[in-house]
Image 1 (cartoon, rainbow, N blue to C red):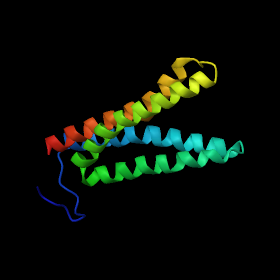
Image 2 (image 1 turned 90 degrees about the vertical axis):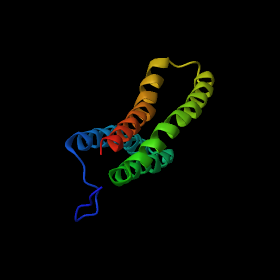
Image 3 (image 1 turned 90 degrees about the horizontal axis):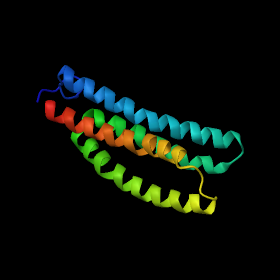
Amino acid sequence: MSVSTFHRPAQDSASSRLVWVALALLLVPAAALLALGVGEFMEGELSGAQHLPEAALLVALGAAAWWRRRLAGIVLVVVAPLLLIAWVSWVLIIREESGNDPVLPWLITAAILFLFPFLAGWLLLRASDTR
């Protein structure tokens, strides 16, 4: 493995494209969480603050993925399904308390929050294999 002057591992174009797509996939839920947090703040709800660290964590994982693709990929592939399970069980409780809201908005939210990071992790693992 050769190292450039910026201490970033050299990469081929296929690996680089996979990393860029993975980073874009990570930015989707980060942007959604940021928008949700800011929107809640603008409505006067201080609970919007909980979404800002979540968004920051995804951005930090994306930054770490630039140098440690395999590690970031493993974290995303393992943690995203676990968080999905915890989130779905929480949603089931919320839906029951609120009179069984429609399921489709919850499924779309789950896809944005957990499927995109899972796919990003998978692409990062693929990118680490192509170097």
